[in-house]
Length: 371
Image (spheres, rainbow, N blue to C red):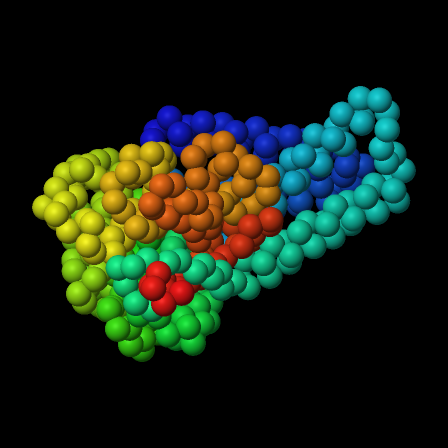
């Protein structure tokens, strides 16, 4: 994990440097460049200072600094590509030279950034309902809703979460499942603002069930669990529960538990106590992140749900996710099992989505004999 963060900081520092170099070159004739450089550094490092160095601000100031910093991070990929392109052209003496042309060039760049942000923000907050119809002779007319990676906190507001809950209420599911990262790192902010409050208004036949994700551990597993329980969410931690006469719901601990001194059962260990019921019951498994789904194949599992990937959230990282995970996003059938990896109902970091979507997933399960 330390290696990952070290590499991430190096990459971030490099992209910031290239982009800053381009800014200084573009505004070279103007004294105002020093103002823009100062703003650039404040915006670029505000979220990092709060996250990594635990700088103490009031919650509201920390929230706004984090939001500004994450917006910048979301745009930085595109700014870096554009800056690199412009600096390469400069080697061939191509680019604006007159002061007037430099100003026009700068205004156009700012305008493009604004357009990218608005487009990404609208896409991120416009949560889509994705429906899948499945068949099974084990259940009759079961409607399941999956939400994942809500990350309620600084970046996912109460207003946005209320909108999600209203959509769920209209779907009227029999079972609501949350596949991890419900709470973002700043757990205290989510509790203070009671961002998840509207969830208490839902009446779900088989209840609301969840597993923890890596961010619940970062936020503090005990505090996260306490707040989720207060919302009516029952959290399964390597546990199995029977719902009605035909459903067996299994919640697996996230792999992040090892970094916090916890223990995670293997799938075989988790299934051992109920192995005699695997053929008769409709088996649903929730696990926040599954790097390799082959371990879940040929286990008599009906539906395996996960999240974590966000499907990359922002282009072109959706293509990176496809290379890292055997299932980066979507529904895949392997043998008798159906696997679904959600792109997430909320966002992490930048309040943007480009070439991905925020989603509420609905599974309508019909009996084979009634189809």
